[in-house]
Amino acid sequence: MARFLKHIGCDACGSSDAKAVYDDGSSFCFSCRTINSAKVSPYVTQNANKQDDEEVLIKAVRYPSDVSQHYSEGAVAWCQKYDINIEQLLQNNIYYSASRDQLIFGFEAEGQLLAYQARNLNPVSKSKRYYTCGDVNELLPIYHCRHPLPDGVNSRRLVLVEDCLSAIKVSYVEGLGADSMPLLGSGISRTKLSRLRPFYDLLNVFLDPDMWHKSLSIVKQAQLLGFRARPIQSDRDPKEHAYKELDSLLRM
Image (cartoon, rainbow, N blue to C red; front, top):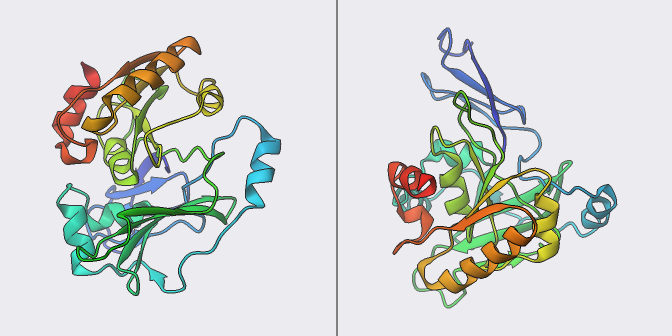
């Protein structure tokens, strides 16, 4: 995800320093709540191999025709249940399809949509809760830490989670300095882990409670690649924890 750069004055309300600017061109004023979205989605692949990136770009897909950032009350309520607010949805370029009653998490590179994951919100729908459109096998959808890094803290920590909302929530944990990445499932290949290694030293694997054995397997693979890796064990999904709880769990 986009990284926080600095606070500046806001032309909309006159505040001298309430406007936060991010490296994807987006901004958000914490005083008047004015949002300027990025022209390009901050969901980008971080592939150490340029040729691989070019091959992935060929496999672009399209969003549902009615996507927008006008969320239903149900969509907002579902996110707020996990302490994710509308501003965070807008900052992360999350979309909503009214015809499908889905939140859409898109993954883009250089302005082109590569894939997306949809979360069905209709409680009576017979469809799966999550489904993915497009090829995500080569994607590394990194959500960058949303807060300035504390003194003495570098950004070479990555937290692996299963779903996008959990990844977004981890990226807002203040003071931790951790990026996060959704696996869009519960597994990751050795090839993907090796592509992440040049960017990160410390790896936390925080999967859902019923996937502890998967966490241990990923940690073992990561350690063989030189990561300082450890699993996070909890009785709840990452997104179900309060921000302070996440901070404590990830620092243990």
